[in-house]
Image (cartoon, rainbow over all chains, first blue to last red; front, side, top):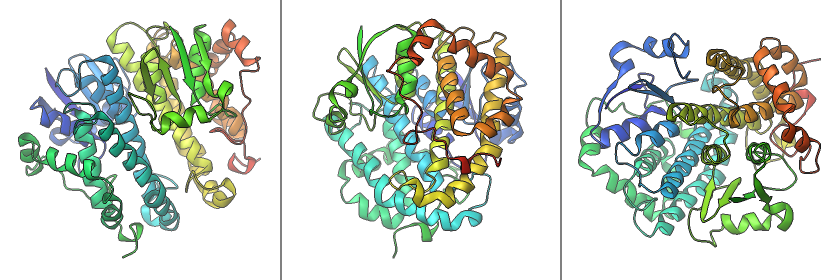
Length: 236
Length: 236
């Protein structure tokens, strides 16, 4: 199967979780907006096509299917890309974990945009400081301790017993958090040996290592979800 | 199959989306915390069991399976409760729509808690006013226009061609929004004839009508997701 991925150019964003799965599996895919511009996405949001209507990118075209919502795309891609265990219970668990990652990603986004995504960061800096403090002190440790416990309970080094898209997404999550909140992650990371080991292991997978050094990997930047604003990190 | 639903007592919350599906299907289920108290939930969050670890309720036990994340639970329950079309493409679409409902539900929650879920509303009132204005003026119309368009494109009165859990969740969403933001919904609702018709239709389903007047239906209140704070609604 050849896949078409639709996601905004210029940022990693939520599209990156799908991109990492396609890259890790060596799948045949094209990143449509990078070839044709963001207008290629807008057409589908405007509904000038038959079938499922996406609310926002990322979305994926696979034959006649159009699938939106990051976790839904990964749930769909898991079996053909061999990136999820075959049993129903583990597939459901992988999806549950991915949805929990998505919840944290939304909270990270809102740490720099607590009032409105349509306003500039500069117009909500004061509120962002309060929200980011709550994220760093309460939410981040709660989520990351949870994922650490998930890996521990699995009794292997993977959250769902074998390498899966959840490993790839946790890898991306850890990189993004370390980029955005280096001081907080230094502190919180001390209690996360299994997540840190997972991150190292994923980075060494040959296709991921090749992807990370390729031009296809957009660097983290201050237009994406994981933004480095020093005033939102732990005090120095 | 007999189901055990785990969700906090005293509020509808995210558990209500699952409850409506179980009620509409006439499924055999027990609402565990209402019998045993919220401690029954905490045990599972603490991981004193084998298998999948939930991050938060709602979660469902079905035989040996434990499934968390609202949309994941509905994705699982859809086929046995006959609340989703059988084809893969429509099942994926229903799930995509449910995940988009979940995104809006999270934004509604954050309209009264823009800084931290761990703080009282009274400690983030000023920020809540700004965020709620953005929700009412930008996000709510965008999401609801999208769902209206989804129903229109389906060419039937249902978002995914036949009665499904998505109808039930959109019903709950509309009721919750009308409770929380009666003035804004009066305004926005003028452009939503299909969603309003869906709401009326679901309310008349015999098992739903019976459920809504039963003691099992907790009223909307100011501890849940949909809260009525007049200062967060459109100005009178």
